[in-house]
Image 1 (cartoon, each protein chain N blue to C red):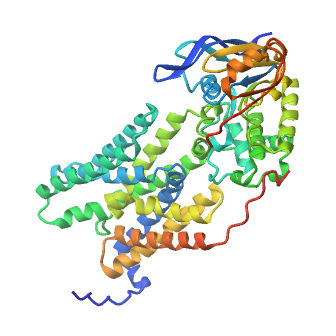
Image 2 (tube, each protein chain N blue to C red; image 1 turned 135 degrees about the vertical axis):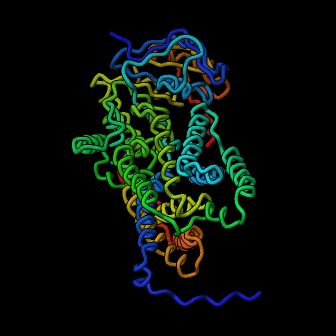
Image 3 (spheres, chains in turn green, red; image 1 turned 180 degrees about the vertical axis):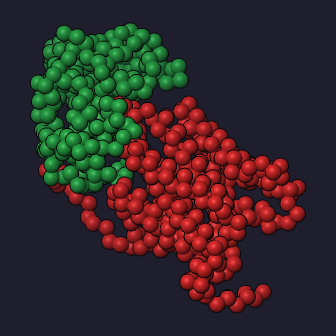
Length: 249
Length: 289
């Protein structure tokens, strides 16, 4: 199994100052990876490096092909005059078409992708008027149009209504079965159990393993420090816990 | 002090009999296309201040060209493109040039231009022409430059509009869409610089924004898609240019200020109107599931 996403002895940072060190992992094609960590733990920094925006200070990070990036939607311009279809259509810019207008087949692909995420009816709705969960799904539709093999999703379930969260989780399972690789960052320790692999970050790589192996009390405590409420589990067995997050927003 | 009585309104059809008016009309029509389309991108990408500074930056170049007999078009083009390059480089290096740097550039350019002008021109009229535009002496070369700017604006909007939209909407994901963001943005800045130079003879260095920002800012209040923003911005620029030209001929003022005052009034009226308009209640989360 070839690695779709990997890091080797990598440290990442801004202006020479490392903020995330000891990265060493490899996720094969068609796996789902949950990236766990507190705010400021380095989740978004890792994604920036994986999309090529940030060069590692040391070591290497690698992605097979060009990944699709689904950022937290409050970082997009919600007042931008674009519809859900317009945003999905942006995926067709990939593949060297950045200096050419959209074709009919691009529009059809965007329409199909919106249908796939359950938003065919909302194609003409302004992106900023959609709910948080719907916006996430539109950005996932954009990633589908992009035909990306690797999807990086930065807290796609944060602040999302339960129905959208359910749809997004189902979509993850479908994408995985198509052989796509997913890296999904989250605060939610509970949801990590549903992934193939878990990567725990808190300014350094704490653990990278299957959920049963990685989600031990000691790892979770090291990942979240004082932000953790442990519900059950001994120090070496799978843990049930809630991370208490202080959102800046 | 008593305001002079306003002159009587001239008959538009009589005005059209003169070559000067017909040339000015054509010039403003071409600039409306360039300014309306590029203005939409300027407003969407938050480049209004840049557009203003790029116009002002050409002022010392225009004065120097006047003194030395060099081509004012080439001199201003060199300064405008240099300004675009500096802004793009600053942005790419991770230190956005920011309002302070742009503001300083603006002040320095105006001050340098005024100091140079006091040596070059016998009267203030020359400097006023460069700053605020004129209808007299607009000729074939001006029309050709504006036509080129209009054609470039249309072509670039068709070819690059999607990329410019995608970068403005989601700058972090834009590189993963395969958009060479730095190159796409430099093309936009350079195009604004070229188009600003085309607008200099008619509206002047200080009032380039009257055609390049104001119509698009008005259109932004009234439209909800990029396409309608582009089209209505060009239409508003044309109406504003036409109205400004008429006022300019009527009151014998330079066209730049006439166009700018009309545009600012339109913007104020639309802004107040859209603030007073009752907004639709925002849909609750998950409403369209």
